[in-house]
Length: 109
Image 1 (tube, rainbow, N blue to C red):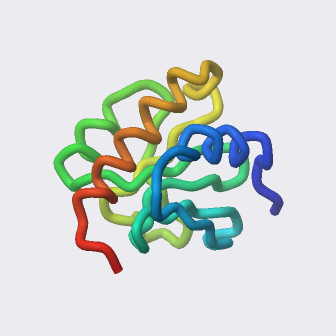
Image 2: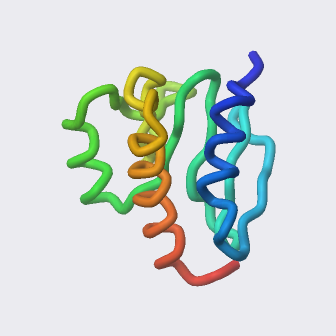
């Protein structure tokens, strides 16, 4: 299934000023890498974000979120944010910034 190209473009625009951003097709969608570490991406029409384990746990209590699970084995510290929670650019930016903060805290690959 195709992924939401408009959402990917919005993420690109938000990440645009950061250095070390690359893209990779993965999970049937697209993933944005920061310094070689997975940061966030698009799966179908939703945003997926990689957060620290504690932050991911708390994020799952927020509206329009759920565990990112493609195979019956949830991906640790990954949260899926449904399109309803990304209508405004500020909403998207909040999630992308959180993911970038985590990916940026990891050693470059």
